[in-house]
Image (cartoon, rainbow over all chains, first blue to last red; front, side):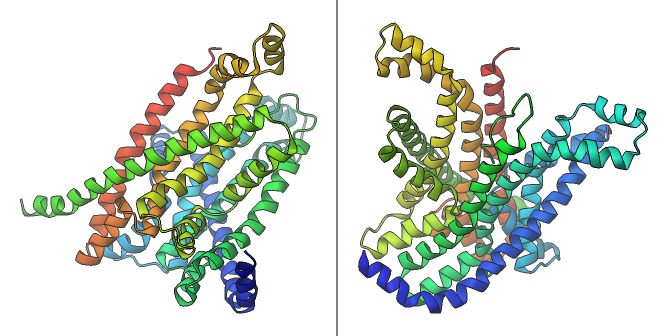
Length: 232
Length: 218
Protein backbone atom coordinates (compact mmCIF):
# COMPACT_ATOMS: atom_id res chain seq x y z
CA UNK A 1 0.00 0.00 0.00
CA UNK A 2 2.78 2.43 0.94
CA UNK A 3 4.74 1.23 -2.11
CA UNK A 4 1.74 2.04 -4.24
CA UNK A 5 1.61 5.66 -3.15
CA UNK A 6 5.36 6.03 -3.30
CA UNK A 7 5.39 4.97 -6.95
CA UNK A 8 2.40 7.20 -7.61
CA UNK A 9 4.08 10.25 -6.08
CA UNK A 10 7.30 9.45 -7.94
CA UNK A 11 5.53 9.55 -11.28
CA UNK A 12 3.04 12.28 -10.45
CA UNK A 13 4.98 15.27 -11.85
CA UNK A 14 5.71 13.55 -15.15
CA UNK A 15 2.19 12.15 -15.54
CA UNK A 16 0.60 15.35 -14.33
CA UNK A 17 2.27 17.32 -17.10
CA UNK A 18 0.50 15.11 -19.61
CA UNK A 19 -2.77 14.49 -17.81
CA UNK A 20 -3.48 18.14 -17.11
CA UNK A 21 -3.87 19.21 -20.77
CA UNK A 22 -5.79 15.98 -21.37
CA UNK A 23 -8.19 16.98 -18.59
CA UNK A 24 -8.60 20.27 -20.43
CA UNK A 25 -9.59 18.33 -23.56
CA UNK A 26 -12.12 16.33 -21.54
CA UNK A 27 -13.66 19.52 -20.18
CA UNK A 28 -13.63 21.08 -23.65
CA UNK A 29 -15.44 18.22 -25.38
CA UNK A 30 -17.90 18.00 -22.48
CA UNK A 31 -18.72 21.69 -22.81
CA UNK A 32 -18.93 21.59 -26.62
CA UNK A 33 -21.19 18.54 -26.76
CA UNK A 34 -23.38 19.86 -23.94
CA UNK A 35 -23.89 23.08 -25.91
CA UNK A 36 -24.78 21.13 -29.03
CA UNK A 37 -27.09 18.81 -27.08
CA UNK A 38 -28.88 21.78 -25.51
CA UNK A 39 -29.35 23.47 -28.88
CA UNK A 40 -30.74 20.26 -30.41
CA UNK A 41 -32.96 19.74 -27.37
CA UNK A 42 -34.46 23.22 -27.80
CA UNK A 43 -35.17 22.38 -31.46
CA UNK A 44 -36.78 19.08 -30.44
CA UNK A 45 -38.91 20.87 -27.86
CA UNK A 46 -40.01 23.48 -30.42
CA UNK A 47 -40.90 20.67 -32.80
CA UNK A 48 -42.84 18.85 -30.14
CA UNK A 49 -44.91 21.88 -29.24
CA UNK A 50 -45.43 22.86 -32.90
CA UNK A 51 -48.47 20.62 -33.22
CA UNK A 52 -47.48 19.40 -36.70
CA UNK A 53 -48.07 15.68 -36.83
CA UNK A 54 -45.22 14.77 -39.22
CA UNK A 55 -42.66 16.60 -37.09
CA UNK A 56 -44.06 14.96 -33.98
CA UNK A 57 -43.65 11.51 -35.51
CA UNK A 58 -40.14 12.23 -36.76
CA UNK A 59 -39.06 13.43 -33.33
CA UNK A 60 -40.55 10.36 -31.68
CA UNK A 61 -38.62 8.10 -34.06
CA UNK A 62 -35.39 10.06 -33.56
CA UNK A 63 -35.63 9.76 -29.79
CA UNK A 64 -36.49 6.06 -29.83
CA UNK A 65 -33.62 5.17 -32.19
CA UNK A 66 -30.98 7.32 -30.50
CA UNK A 67 -32.03 6.08 -27.08
CA UNK A 68 -31.55 2.47 -28.20
CA UNK A 69 -27.95 2.98 -29.40
CA UNK A 70 -24.84 2.82 -27.22
CA UNK A 71 -22.69 5.96 -27.35
CA UNK A 72 -19.83 3.85 -28.67
CA UNK A 73 -21.95 2.64 -31.61
CA UNK A 74 -22.94 6.23 -32.43
CA UNK A 75 -19.32 7.39 -32.25
CA UNK A 76 -18.09 4.51 -34.43
CA UNK A 77 -20.83 5.16 -36.99
CA UNK A 78 -19.87 8.84 -37.21
CA UNK A 79 -16.10 8.44 -37.04
CA UNK A 80 -15.55 5.19 -38.96
CA UNK A 81 -18.85 4.65 -40.77
CA UNK A 82 -19.50 8.04 -42.37
CA UNK A 83 -16.12 8.24 -44.18
CA UNK A 84 -17.38 5.26 -46.22
CA UNK A 85 -20.10 7.61 -47.49
CA UNK A 86 -17.60 10.38 -48.11
CA UNK A 87 -17.99 12.41 -44.90
CA UNK A 88 -14.91 12.66 -42.68
CA UNK A 89 -14.67 14.18 -39.19
CA UNK A 90 -11.82 14.81 -36.80
CA UNK A 91 -12.01 12.83 -33.52
CA UNK A 92 -13.05 15.98 -31.67
CA UNK A 93 -15.83 16.81 -34.14
CA UNK A 94 -17.07 13.22 -34.25
CA UNK A 95 -17.05 13.03 -30.44
CA UNK A 96 -18.89 16.34 -30.07
CA UNK A 97 -21.54 15.43 -32.63
CA UNK A 98 -22.00 11.91 -31.24
CA UNK A 99 -22.31 12.96 -27.60
CA UNK A 100 -24.44 15.95 -28.62
CA UNK A 101 -26.90 13.79 -30.54
CA UNK A 102 -27.17 11.19 -27.76
CA UNK A 103 -27.62 13.77 -25.00
CA UNK A 104 -30.09 15.87 -26.99
CA UNK A 105 -32.69 13.19 -26.26
CA UNK A 106 -32.08 13.35 -22.51
CA UNK A 107 -32.02 17.14 -22.41
CA UNK A 108 -35.20 17.34 -24.51
CA UNK A 109 -36.95 15.33 -21.82
CA UNK A 110 -35.63 17.68 -19.14
CA UNK A 111 -36.85 20.75 -21.05
CA UNK A 112 -40.22 19.10 -21.61
CA UNK A 113 -40.63 18.60 -17.86
CA UNK A 114 -39.78 22.29 -17.41
CA UNK A 115 -42.33 23.52 -19.94
CA UNK A 116 -45.03 21.14 -18.77
CA UNK A 117 -44.64 22.31 -15.19
CA UNK A 118 -45.95 25.77 -16.07
CA UNK A 119 -49.60 26.44 -16.40
CA UNK A 120 -50.51 28.17 -19.66
CA UNK A 121 -52.85 30.48 -17.81
CA UNK A 122 -49.93 32.24 -16.18
CA UNK A 123 -48.62 33.44 -19.52
CA UNK A 124 -52.06 34.48 -20.68
CA UNK A 125 -52.75 36.33 -17.45
CA UNK A 126 -49.45 38.21 -17.61
CA UNK A 127 -50.10 39.20 -21.24
CA UNK A 128 -53.62 40.26 -20.38
CA UNK A 129 -52.18 42.33 -17.52
CA UNK A 130 -50.21 44.31 -20.10
CA UNK A 131 -46.75 42.75 -19.85
CA UNK A 132 -44.76 42.43 -23.08
CA UNK A 133 -44.00 38.85 -24.22
CA UNK A 134 -40.32 39.40 -23.41
CA UNK A 135 -41.15 40.58 -19.93
CA UNK A 136 -43.44 37.61 -19.42
CA UNK A 137 -40.66 35.25 -20.40
CA UNK A 138 -38.08 36.95 -18.19
CA UNK A 139 -40.16 37.53 -15.08
CA UNK A 140 -42.77 34.76 -15.17
CA UNK A 141 -41.65 31.80 -17.24
CA UNK A 142 -37.87 31.70 -16.80
CA UNK A 143 -37.66 31.93 -12.99
CA UNK A 144 -40.11 29.05 -12.61
CA UNK A 145 -38.70 26.88 -15.40
CA UNK A 146 -35.15 27.18 -14.08
CA UNK A 147 -36.22 25.64 -10.79
CA UNK A 148 -37.46 22.52 -12.52
CA UNK A 149 -34.84 22.30 -15.24
CA UNK A 150 -31.56 23.24 -13.58
CA UNK A 151 -30.92 20.20 -11.30
CA UNK A 152 -31.57 17.54 -13.98
CA UNK A 153 -29.54 19.57 -16.49
CA UNK A 154 -26.58 19.50 -14.12
CA UNK A 155 -27.06 15.77 -13.50
CA UNK A 156 -26.93 15.26 -17.28
CA UNK A 157 -23.80 17.38 -17.47
CA UNK A 158 -22.09 15.09 -14.92
CA UNK A 159 -23.15 12.01 -16.93
CA UNK A 160 -21.85 13.67 -20.07
CA UNK A 161 -18.49 14.34 -18.44
CA UNK A 162 -18.19 10.65 -17.59
CA UNK A 163 -19.39 9.52 -21.02
CA UNK A 164 -16.86 11.77 -22.76
CA UNK A 165 -14.35 9.06 -21.78
CA UNK A 166 -15.83 6.91 -24.55
CA UNK A 167 -14.22 9.35 -27.05
CA UNK A 168 -10.92 7.70 -26.11
CA UNK A 169 -12.03 4.80 -28.32
CA UNK A 170 -12.18 7.04 -31.41
CA UNK A 171 -8.66 8.32 -30.72
CA UNK A 172 -9.62 11.69 -29.22
CA UNK A 173 -6.74 12.48 -26.89
CA UNK A 174 -8.64 13.22 -23.69
CA UNK A 175 -8.06 12.02 -20.15
CA UNK A 176 -8.84 8.32 -20.60
CA UNK A 177 -6.81 7.92 -23.79
CA UNK A 178 -3.86 9.74 -22.22
CA UNK A 179 -4.12 7.30 -19.32
CA UNK A 180 -4.05 4.37 -21.73
CA UNK A 181 -1.02 5.74 -23.56
CA UNK A 182 0.85 6.32 -20.30
CA UNK A 183 -0.13 2.81 -19.19
CA UNK A 184 1.36 1.21 -22.28
CA UNK A 185 4.63 3.07 -21.66
CA UNK A 186 4.96 2.66 -17.92
CA UNK A 187 3.29 -0.71 -17.30
CA UNK A 188 1.69 0.68 -14.17
CA UNK A 189 -2.01 0.28 -15.03
CA UNK A 190 -3.32 0.37 -11.47
CA UNK A 191 -1.47 3.57 -10.59
CA UNK A 192 -2.36 5.46 -13.71
CA UNK A 193 -6.05 4.57 -13.74
CA UNK A 194 -6.50 5.25 -10.04
CA UNK A 195 -5.03 8.67 -10.78
CA UNK A 196 -7.26 9.16 -13.85
CA UNK A 197 -10.29 8.07 -11.80
CA UNK A 198 -9.32 10.52 -9.06
CA UNK A 199 -9.20 13.36 -11.59
CA UNK A 200 -12.68 12.54 -12.91
CA UNK A 201 -13.93 12.20 -9.35
CA UNK A 202 -12.49 15.56 -8.34
CA UNK A 203 -14.55 17.23 -11.08
CA UNK A 204 -17.74 15.17 -10.92
CA UNK A 205 -18.18 14.80 -7.17
CA UNK A 206 -18.24 18.52 -6.29
CA UNK A 207 -20.81 18.96 -9.05
CA UNK A 208 -22.91 16.13 -7.61
CA UNK A 209 -22.72 17.69 -4.15
CA UNK A 210 -23.68 21.06 -5.62
CA UNK A 211 -26.80 19.59 -7.27
CA UNK A 212 -27.78 17.95 -3.99
CA UNK A 213 -27.28 21.26 -2.19
CA UNK A 214 -29.15 23.22 -4.85
CA UNK A 215 -32.21 21.08 -5.34
CA UNK A 216 -34.00 21.62 -2.00
CA UNK A 217 -33.19 25.35 -2.19
CA UNK A 218 -34.78 25.72 -5.61
CA UNK A 219 -37.84 23.82 -4.45
CA UNK A 220 -38.33 26.03 -1.42
CA UNK A 221 -41.78 27.56 -1.48
CA UNK A 222 -43.11 25.17 -4.12
CA UNK A 223 -46.14 23.32 -2.92
CA UNK A 224 -45.54 20.04 -4.74
CA UNK A 225 -41.92 18.94 -4.93
CA UNK A 226 -41.10 16.80 -7.93
CA UNK A 227 -39.17 13.58 -7.48
CA UNK A 228 -35.41 13.46 -7.18
CA UNK A 229 -33.31 12.93 -10.25
CA UNK A 230 -32.44 9.25 -10.72
CA UNK A 231 -31.46 9.15 -14.38
CA UNK A 232 -30.19 9.09 -16.99
CA UNK B 1 -27.50 -13.01 -54.34
CA UNK B 2 -23.92 -11.82 -54.13
CA UNK B 3 -24.87 -8.94 -51.89
CA UNK B 4 -26.91 -11.19 -49.61
CA UNK B 5 -23.96 -13.55 -49.14
CA UNK B 6 -21.81 -10.53 -48.40
CA UNK B 7 -24.30 -9.31 -45.80
CA UNK B 8 -24.60 -12.73 -44.15
CA UNK B 9 -20.83 -13.06 -44.03
CA UNK B 10 -20.73 -10.00 -41.77
CA UNK B 11 -24.01 -10.48 -39.98
CA UNK B 12 -23.42 -13.99 -38.64
CA UNK B 13 -20.42 -13.25 -36.39
CA UNK B 14 -22.21 -10.13 -35.14
CA UNK B 15 -25.35 -12.08 -34.25
CA UNK B 16 -23.19 -14.54 -32.32
CA UNK B 17 -21.56 -11.56 -30.57
CA UNK B 18 -25.03 -10.25 -29.69
CA UNK B 19 -25.38 -13.43 -27.64
CA UNK B 20 -22.32 -12.40 -25.65
CA UNK B 21 -23.78 -8.90 -25.22
CA UNK B 22 -26.93 -10.43 -23.74
CA UNK B 23 -24.87 -12.80 -21.57
CA UNK B 24 -22.85 -9.92 -20.11
CA UNK B 25 -26.02 -7.86 -19.61
CA UNK B 26 -27.83 -10.64 -17.75
CA UNK B 27 -24.80 -11.46 -15.60
CA UNK B 28 -24.14 -7.84 -14.68
CA UNK B 29 -27.85 -7.19 -14.04
CA UNK B 30 -28.06 -10.16 -11.65
CA UNK B 31 -24.96 -9.01 -9.77
CA UNK B 32 -26.09 -5.37 -9.68
CA UNK B 33 -29.62 -6.05 -8.40
CA UNK B 34 -28.43 -8.54 -5.76
CA UNK B 35 -25.65 -6.33 -4.45
CA UNK B 36 -27.73 -3.16 -4.77
CA UNK B 37 -30.65 -4.63 -2.81
CA UNK B 38 -28.24 -6.00 -0.21
CA UNK B 39 -26.45 -2.68 0.33
CA UNK B 40 -29.69 -0.69 0.41
CA UNK B 41 -31.15 -3.15 2.94
CA UNK B 42 -28.06 -2.97 5.13
CA UNK B 43 -28.31 0.80 5.10
CA UNK B 44 -31.99 0.55 5.91
CA UNK B 45 -31.53 -1.78 8.91
CA UNK B 46 -28.38 -0.27 10.34
CA UNK B 47 -28.55 3.48 10.64
CA UNK B 48 -25.12 3.48 12.33
CA UNK B 49 -22.64 5.83 10.66
CA UNK B 50 -19.94 3.17 10.71
CA UNK B 51 -22.01 1.00 8.38
CA UNK B 52 -23.36 3.83 6.21
CA UNK B 53 -20.08 5.53 5.49
CA UNK B 54 -18.39 2.70 3.53
CA UNK B 55 -21.58 2.17 1.52
CA UNK B 56 -21.83 5.89 0.76
CA UNK B 57 -18.18 5.99 -0.31
CA UNK B 58 -18.78 3.00 -2.58
CA UNK B 59 -21.80 4.63 -4.17
CA UNK B 60 -20.13 8.02 -4.65
CA UNK B 61 -16.93 6.59 -6.11
CA UNK B 62 -18.76 4.38 -8.57
CA UNK B 63 -21.20 7.08 -9.62
CA UNK B 64 -18.68 9.88 -10.13
CA UNK B 65 -16.02 8.07 -12.16
CA UNK B 66 -16.54 6.89 -15.77
CA UNK B 67 -17.37 3.22 -16.29
CA UNK B 68 -14.43 2.88 -18.64
CA UNK B 69 -12.01 3.88 -15.87
CA UNK B 70 -13.49 1.25 -13.55
CA UNK B 71 -13.26 -1.40 -16.24
CA UNK B 72 -9.60 -0.54 -16.88
CA UNK B 73 -8.81 -0.70 -13.15
CA UNK B 74 -10.56 -4.06 -12.80
CA UNK B 75 -9.07 -5.59 -15.95
CA UNK B 76 -5.57 -4.08 -16.27
CA UNK B 77 -5.08 -2.85 -12.69
CA UNK B 78 -5.99 -6.09 -10.95
CA UNK B 79 -3.85 -8.08 -13.39
CA UNK B 80 -0.95 -5.87 -12.29
CA UNK B 81 -1.36 -7.00 -8.66
CA UNK B 82 -1.69 -10.63 -9.75
CA UNK B 83 -5.47 -11.04 -10.08
CA UNK B 84 -5.87 -11.91 -13.75
CA UNK B 85 -9.54 -11.97 -14.71
CA UNK B 86 -10.91 -13.33 -17.95
CA UNK B 87 -12.22 -10.41 -20.00
CA UNK B 88 -15.81 -11.69 -19.79
CA UNK B 89 -15.58 -12.10 -16.01
CA UNK B 90 -14.04 -8.64 -15.69
CA UNK B 91 -16.85 -7.25 -17.84
CA UNK B 92 -19.61 -8.80 -15.71
CA UNK B 93 -17.95 -7.94 -12.40
CA UNK B 94 -17.12 -4.40 -13.55
CA UNK B 95 -20.54 -3.53 -14.94
CA UNK B 96 -22.19 -5.34 -12.01
CA UNK B 97 -20.30 -3.28 -9.43
CA UNK B 98 -21.05 -0.04 -11.28
CA UNK B 99 -24.72 -0.99 -11.54
CA UNK B 100 -24.90 -1.93 -7.87
CA UNK B 101 -24.05 1.66 -6.96
CA UNK B 102 -26.92 2.92 -9.14
CA UNK B 103 -29.38 0.36 -7.79
CA UNK B 104 -28.44 0.99 -4.15
CA UNK B 105 -29.68 4.54 -4.64
CA UNK B 106 -32.80 3.40 -6.50
CA UNK B 107 -33.74 0.94 -3.74
CA UNK B 108 -33.01 3.52 -1.06
CA UNK B 109 -35.45 5.90 -2.71
CA UNK B 110 -37.92 3.02 -2.97
CA UNK B 111 -37.72 2.20 0.74
CA UNK B 112 -38.09 5.86 1.64
CA UNK B 113 -41.22 6.09 -0.48
CA UNK B 114 -43.06 3.76 1.91
CA UNK B 115 -44.47 5.91 4.69
CA UNK B 116 -42.69 5.40 8.01
CA UNK B 117 -46.06 5.01 9.75
CA UNK B 118 -46.56 1.66 8.05
CA UNK B 119 -43.32 0.39 9.46
CA UNK B 120 -44.17 1.65 12.94
CA UNK B 121 -47.62 0.13 12.76
CA UNK B 122 -46.26 -3.26 11.67
CA UNK B 123 -43.71 -3.24 14.47
CA UNK B 124 -46.40 -2.13 16.95
CA UNK B 125 -48.61 -5.13 16.15
CA UNK B 126 -45.68 -7.41 16.87
CA UNK B 127 -44.07 -8.14 13.51
CA UNK B 128 -40.32 -8.59 13.61
CA UNK B 129 -38.21 -6.03 11.72
CA UNK B 130 -37.31 -8.73 9.19
CA UNK B 131 -40.98 -9.59 8.61
CA UNK B 132 -41.90 -5.92 8.34
CA UNK B 133 -39.29 -5.50 5.66
CA UNK B 134 -40.28 -8.61 3.72
CA UNK B 135 -44.04 -8.41 4.02
CA UNK B 136 -44.76 -4.67 4.19
CA UNK B 137 -41.97 -2.59 2.73
CA UNK B 138 -40.42 -4.69 -0.04
CA UNK B 139 -43.67 -5.48 -1.93
CA UNK B 140 -44.54 -1.78 -2.09
CA UNK B 141 -41.03 -0.82 -3.09
CA UNK B 142 -41.28 -2.58 -6.46
CA UNK B 143 -43.89 -0.19 -7.74
CA UNK B 144 -41.63 2.79 -7.20
CA UNK B 145 -38.37 1.15 -8.22
CA UNK B 146 -39.50 -0.67 -11.33
CA UNK B 147 -39.35 2.30 -13.75
CA UNK B 148 -35.81 3.33 -12.79
CA UNK B 149 -34.69 -0.33 -12.74
CA UNK B 150 -36.11 -0.70 -16.26
CA UNK B 151 -34.22 2.39 -17.42
CA UNK B 152 -31.10 0.97 -15.86
CA UNK B 153 -31.57 -2.35 -17.70
CA UNK B 154 -31.70 -0.64 -21.10
CA UNK B 155 -28.74 1.56 -20.17
CA UNK B 156 -26.85 -1.57 -19.11
CA UNK B 157 -27.34 -3.31 -22.45
CA UNK B 158 -25.91 -0.22 -24.13
CA UNK B 159 -23.05 0.07 -21.64
CA UNK B 160 -21.91 -3.47 -22.39
CA UNK B 161 -20.45 -1.93 -25.57
CA UNK B 162 -17.76 -0.42 -23.33
CA UNK B 163 -16.34 -3.83 -22.47
CA UNK B 164 -15.08 -3.94 -26.06
CA UNK B 165 -12.25 -1.85 -24.62
CA UNK B 166 -11.17 -4.78 -22.43
CA UNK B 167 -11.46 -7.28 -25.31
CA UNK B 168 -14.70 -9.01 -24.33
CA UNK B 169 -16.03 -10.44 -27.63
CA UNK B 170 -19.40 -8.64 -27.67
CA UNK B 171 -20.96 -6.73 -30.60
CA UNK B 172 -18.66 -3.69 -30.79
CA UNK B 173 -15.46 -5.69 -30.26
CA UNK B 174 -16.44 -8.18 -32.95
CA UNK B 175 -17.42 -5.35 -35.29
CA UNK B 176 -14.05 -3.70 -34.76
CA UNK B 177 -12.27 -6.98 -35.64
CA UNK B 178 -14.38 -7.48 -38.75
CA UNK B 179 -13.54 -3.96 -39.87
CA UNK B 180 -9.81 -4.50 -39.36
CA UNK B 181 -9.95 -7.49 -41.70
CA UNK B 182 -12.32 -6.16 -44.33
CA UNK B 183 -12.46 -2.31 -44.15
CA UNK B 184 -16.25 -2.45 -44.64
CA UNK B 185 -16.76 0.15 -41.90
CA UNK B 186 -20.15 1.54 -42.90
CA UNK B 187 -21.77 -1.85 -43.42
CA UNK B 188 -20.32 -3.52 -40.31
CA UNK B 189 -21.06 -0.68 -37.91
CA UNK B 190 -24.47 -0.30 -39.50
CA UNK B 191 -25.28 -3.94 -38.74
CA UNK B 192 -23.90 -3.53 -35.21
CA UNK B 193 -26.15 -0.52 -34.62
CA UNK B 194 -29.14 -2.42 -36.05
CA UNK B 195 -28.52 -5.25 -33.58
CA UNK B 196 -28.61 -2.82 -30.65
CA UNK B 197 -31.87 -1.39 -31.98
CA UNK B 198 -33.25 -4.93 -32.26
CA UNK B 199 -32.44 -5.59 -28.60
CA UNK B 200 -33.09 -2.23 -26.94
CA UNK B 201 -36.27 -1.01 -28.64
CA UNK B 202 -38.37 -4.10 -27.78
CA UNK B 203 -36.82 -4.16 -24.31
CA UNK B 204 -37.71 -0.56 -23.52
CA UNK B 205 -41.21 -0.98 -24.99
CA UNK B 206 -41.79 -4.05 -22.84
CA UNK B 207 -40.59 -2.17 -19.77
CA UNK B 208 -42.89 0.76 -20.54
CA UNK B 209 -45.83 -1.62 -20.85
CA UNK B 210 -44.96 -3.26 -17.54
CA UNK B 211 -44.67 0.18 -15.93
CA UNK B 212 -48.13 1.17 -17.11
CA UNK B 213 -49.58 -2.03 -15.71
CA UNK B 214 -47.90 -1.53 -12.34
CA UNK B 215 -48.70 2.17 -12.07
CA UNK B 216 -51.01 3.28 -9.27
CA UNK B 217 -54.39 3.92 -10.91
CA UNK B 218 -55.58 7.48 -10.67
